[in-house]
Image (cartoon, rainbow, N blue to C red; front, side, top):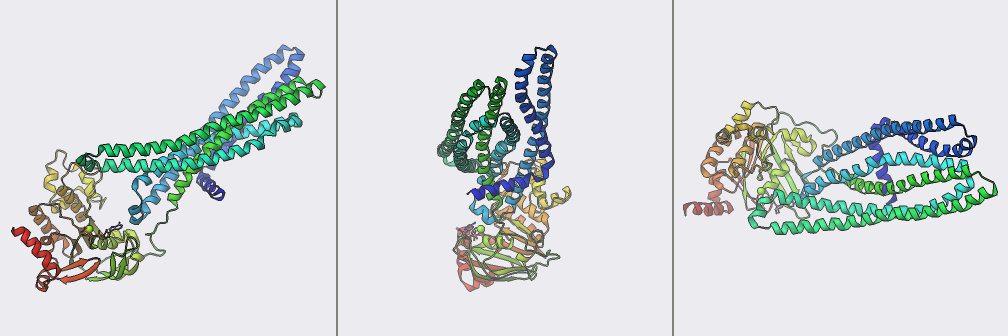
Length: 580
Ligand SMILES: Nc1ncnc2c1ncn2[C@@H]1O[C@H](COP(=O)(O)OP(=O)(O)OP(=O)(O)O)[C@@H](O)[C@H]1O
Ligand SMILES: [Mg+2]
């Protein structure tokens, strides 16, 4: 555990490295702050011992000037210190947040299948927020109070080392409870942040699933879920507060032992004449000034432990291995013809295999349809080709190139996917379509929309292509959303086209039109079409019938009907439905 904490410090330190100059400046300014404090404590002695004794007015005037001058130095130094250290902290946090978001986006679909995105959001916002609040802001205190403490301690020993020893016997005693409290605080802060992660997930799910909540009238259940998790958070924070609140009184009590000892021993030494009254006063003032930063530092330790707790969680996310990555020396896929090959591919999301020894050879330009029961592995196949996952065994090749050996960027350039789940960004329709090709002109976007049979309804909107749609496109119908996604894929103009239930939400009439448009698009492109509606796939060059991750039948529509297997049965069922 201790080693881990050390690592966290080191990594945070590495993040602050680019801002060394700011931090150094702040440290120098801290010297000014601490120095003026120490000077004031030191000046008490000559003030009492000489100025009062000498009864000289000019010295009285001078002391007034000195007090103001010292305050001015302290104020200016404090400003410089605070400004530079806080901006440094802010910059460190900014870098860290950028890195964590960047890393999160590079994590694979496998990671996101297992991790609720709310918990990732929470780490980026809340955990780093906690880190910022505690570390960045408290660094000021550490610097300032630390240096003041060192100054005061030196002054105490310089003044009277015997008294100083008495005053400091409390210090080692104080370290034990302080570090115990710090450890507890760190533990409960970690737990409370995990609770905030769960809270964020609940929030995210209930808002993005608001329609389901409303449809089933489960607002009450969601509120209850939220309330109970919110209370869990409170229970954890209560422990943090308890330890936090206990630390000051404990330190107060311990320091009173030191103060009492100094008073008891110091007064005796003054009576014996071993020390002047002024020296004792100066000592007591310095000791008072020392206990203040010491208490502050102990409190700071609590805050820093909170930061470490938060940082551990942040680094955990940053340490999540990226399992889909460009291999060293990965080449770029270029001038793809679209020859797609699955060779003995085994794949499973968990222990169970979804695809077993799957092989398929698709020559350039062929339109392949995938049909089969729900859960047969059709989307999985399409996902593997997009390299959302890597196969466990076997390989997938495009134009003979293993796709795990080429750069992801160049692979994605070759692929246009219309997924089973439509997703639209909170942006204009124009930008939603243009997402697949940011440099496309408005005319190109319009053309793609026309092909996807989307131009009509877009143009009918009050703002046309400039219409902003909700983060889940709530103002569009299911079929309209699909057509936006199809337009997006058309615009991509890639040699390999993947259509996973791309037209399932369209009415028969618009599907026929979109199909015709896609038919044009499919020319010279290798295409995978997944569809339950057989009318969608009848005209494919080849139809693959999948069952439980295996290829059961393949051939043209006519061949498969003649064959009289699974496809024939599916066809009969759908045909009867239509006829009846
Ligand atoms: N992310 C995932 N994690 C774990 N298992 C998954 C995941 N996605 C799919 N599966 C499982 O893999 C199997 C194949 O799923 P897949 O989505 O490929 O089916 P499909 O043929 O596309 O079905 P549908 O026609 O309903 O879309 C299913 O048993 C499913 O439960
Ligand atoms: Mg599917």
